[in-house]
Figure 1: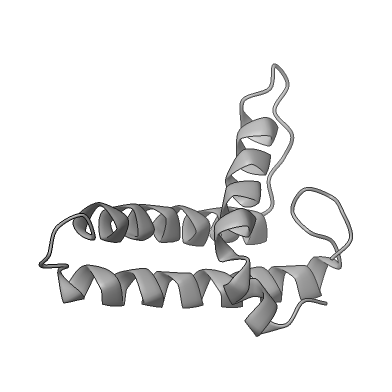
Figure 2: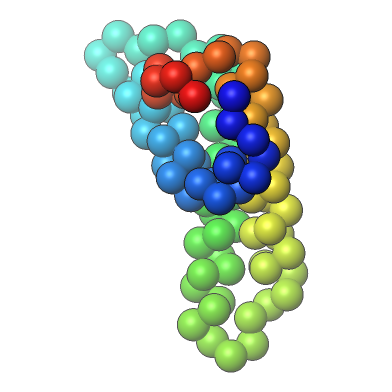
Length: 99
């Protein structure tokens, strides 16, 4: 199982993987069922991606809004914890590969 440190280090890639998996499962001609746990993980991934995007955008300017930076860190932490928990429960990564 991945450690929280590993999940934090790879949060960007993991969030993109979760979002891509969600899209593949829900946008197919015959959508695959999505568990409540995976739905919650997708919500955390989406929140993190939005917060990171907002913070990245503001970094272009000298006055990075500290609230955006804190929100990015908080959503990254929440996503990493959710990913770790999901991986431990399901024993597989969202894409179906082993952790």
